[in-house]
Length: 515
Image 1 (tube, rainbow, N blue to C red):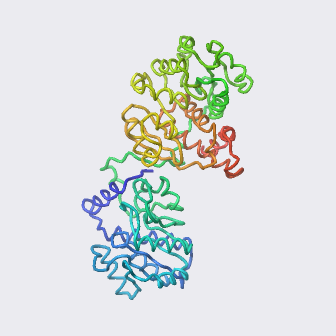
Image 2: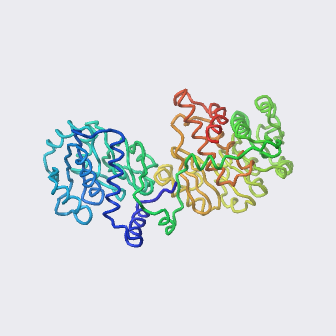
Image 3: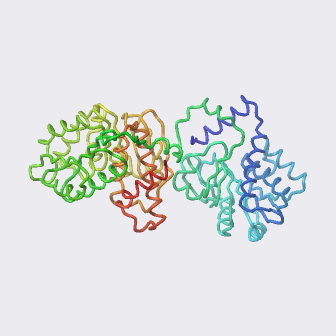
């Protein structure tokens, strides 16, 4: 499903109105009908329901005026508080306001300095509040008397349905400055916006409904929309298939290069996840003095002991043998539990420069790459990087705060600059491809904020690549599946006690639910 910025949505609206010929007031009417439908779905009969509508002076307010008309016609007791001077309302919004007043529906102008006592009384009696104060074009925080109104609404703890986006959420970044409406449901129009999915804004959206208001699908083709929200249907199509007449060689040879003293669990998690995702043959390239640990924990894997000179981490002497092993692989993952010793740096750079199959780089592999980013340009095959915000900070030189404020933009710019697929992990993980496409992932929960879950993700992505998926598709599907596993486990165990091993063991069941 496409996701757009507020600017792109305005361009789509304008094209629909001016080129296709659908008048703006028709789009506004369709939006009002769809919001009304959602209210009817939730409340059934609206007869004698007390509904308070909050309207701004723009088109979002115009939607609220049209919604009020429909609610009134359904028997609801409606009052519209207009947080602007009526004289400043124009265009399609003005038409709907005039209709409303001609019908005798109560509208109340609320301006700076006005007493909010009447509004407070109405809110106390309200069965529902409709938020039509600001749309997706809001920039800057909501303060002043409008901020006070929003604070009052939230304090009354009444169910709120937001029109397009909760007032206070930046439609592009999801940022919130000042007050913000807390909605139980948001009905947006045409396409979802970034602010619906990015933190902290997504926490105020509630259930998101993307409503069709008759914008033709063909219109979006006139705009360079390269951003998507990953959905179940897409991932279901991407999950590698299985043939009745097949053998282990048909499902990929995956090499995970991993291991250092005290960090052997990372490779075990990545390897288990790879096997549970369908890998036919799993190989673990590990320091030879630690190989017995992997042999005891992953009996299904082939262990490839590599030279470590009894140091407990890979040394550069292992490079010739490692490069020979890589020649037989379909996918390579490197980094989990690897350490950042100087010798390991030589190993990582050699792998990046010589590997002929797609590779996934995570954890210490990323930390070492951050010391010499130009090595990425020497890669002979596609590269997928899976940084968390701290690792992304080391890769970009930006602060974690800067990255979290611009997760989509940061991931996209990095991928385009270095020609890699970037999986920026965290709440609503972002996958960015070298061609500028971006995918926002909707699955996952806070229980996954625990050590080792990133290693599981590395194993899933590497497995899907080994089974033949394009690296970008493997990253998109892998991230969704990873989050889905977390959600399924949390539904049974809760979020507090979730551990990475739970995710790895849940993979087969999650895949089964998708195919």
